[in-house]
Image 1: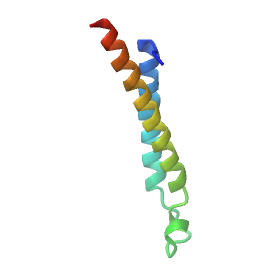
Image 2 (image 1 turned 180 degrees about the horizontal axis):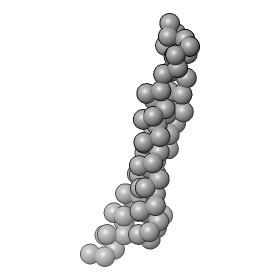
Image 3 (image 1 turned 90 degrees about the vertical axis):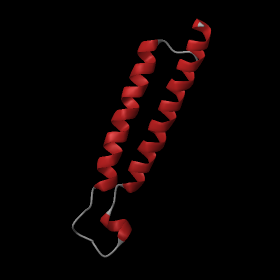
Image 4 (image 1 turned 30 degrees about the vertical axis):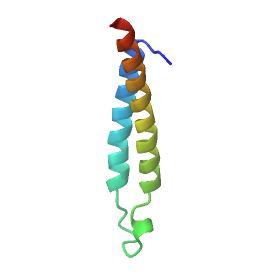
Length: 73
């Protein structure tokens, strides 16, 4: 699981993008149903999935970087 530097940077950029999109989805509130919590925030499950996938990408990139930096030393 050793990636080159460009792949690690792309993984981190994709993770940051997913975090930004998930922040929008998590805070989006529909005005139609304010009396039900789940109905007023319809995209929270997508936001949590994006955060989970972004975290997985970030951990993968950091593990690859740490393995590569050990080989340099």
